[in-house]
Amino acid sequence: MIGDIPRPLTEYPALSGESLWHSLVARAELEPFNAIATGIFILAILHTFSAARFAALAHRVQHRHDETARASGRLPTPSVAAEVLHFFGEVEVVFGLWAVVLAVAMTAYAGWETATHYLNDTVNYTEPLFVVVIMALASTRPVVRFAESGLRLVANAGGGTPAAWWVSILTIGPLLGSLITEPAAMTICALLLARQFYDLEPSAKLKYATLGALFVNVSIGGTLTHFAAPPVLMVARPWGWDTLFMLSHFGWRAAVAIALSTAVYYVVFRRELTALVGHAPVADEEQPDEDVPGAVLLPVPPWVTAAHLLFMAWTVVTSHYPALFLGGFLFFLGFARATGLYQSRIELKTPLLVGFFLAGLVIHGGLQGWWIAPLLGSLSENPLFLGSALLTAVNDNALITYLATLVPNLGDPLKAAVVQGAVVGGGLTVIANAPNPAGQALLGRFFDDAVSPLGLALGALVPTLIAAAMFRFF
Image (cartoon, rainbow, N blue to C red):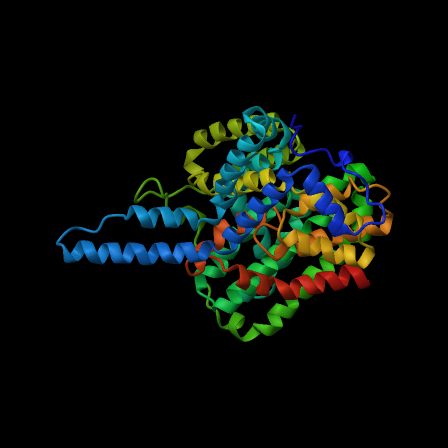
């Protein structure tokens, strides 16, 4: 009789002098579905990296369809083939699509009850649900205005230029992730960068450098506390790490790395950054209402902003309890409707897509422990740091640190190394850190077709190396 999937890690024989490869082969033989699940996961990752190709192909198919329609004297209409290809080119839906393949394979292998038990009872969807809610709250007009007014004080100290905004957003914004959580910090930083920087049409190199720096800075910027960064949250309770520990062992290094990375990119791109010309500031009362043509939104009263911040605080405090933060979000939607004169449209599409992406990722990631756990357990300190960073690039870093808590007799230096690697590598790919899909979803429109995985990795390389040096050598 086929047992539960995934098989508990305690049921696998411990490493006993044999090589890691032989141990993994033995585990695959003991549970053949391990190889099937990992194979599907690899295909999903490859699909993620090739999403831009599907998007480009969709444009070409639609263009040919339009030309054929005009040649026949018909009005152009959407091409079904182009729409399907465009759907396959949406990074946010990739893991969800392959989760369907995984569910079919699991049903064929172990039966419907096993598949539904895994998808419904085993996988924890708290993080995807939390990201949906916190993204929706953080992207509201009162919250963005509040964050913008705070960062304006810093930017004005540098003259209020686009370069000053760029520096302030990339340094102060990610550190806010230690208080309001990384997904919220990513949402606010991305929205402000879109308005104060990407709208000014910088070069492609500077776009990717900025995106890479943002992803890395947010990944390490949440390490000043023990509750804001998902990979830290996974280990804080089992290993007894509190905020004082995080500040003394991680936080100050992260802050210095963020400042250094931003400074290095500022020096490299100084000429272009200083040449950017910002938009004239728009008064709060002049913001148009997207839902009512010709209408404008009223200035946001302080009590409305305070209410939004309280809803965010409630969501952060209850982040482990979906019933509570989802209930709070429903109350928020009612409050937003009642205060519609001060609200822009509540954006739900992007948060839902990001949540769908993360839900698909945790579905696949929950079946990868059979090879990740023994791999982590077989490495010494420096290789463990490097291995954790590289594994993070192809998996959610919170999963990496969670699996590290299952490795027996992991010493304190090894615990630090695995978490350091997980947060340092969190900017190399879209799937490396939970907030990254939010950043890509909000800023992807500024890149041709879609964000290039290679371009993102190259943009994140320098900040990643600086962060790695700070964590490992200082």
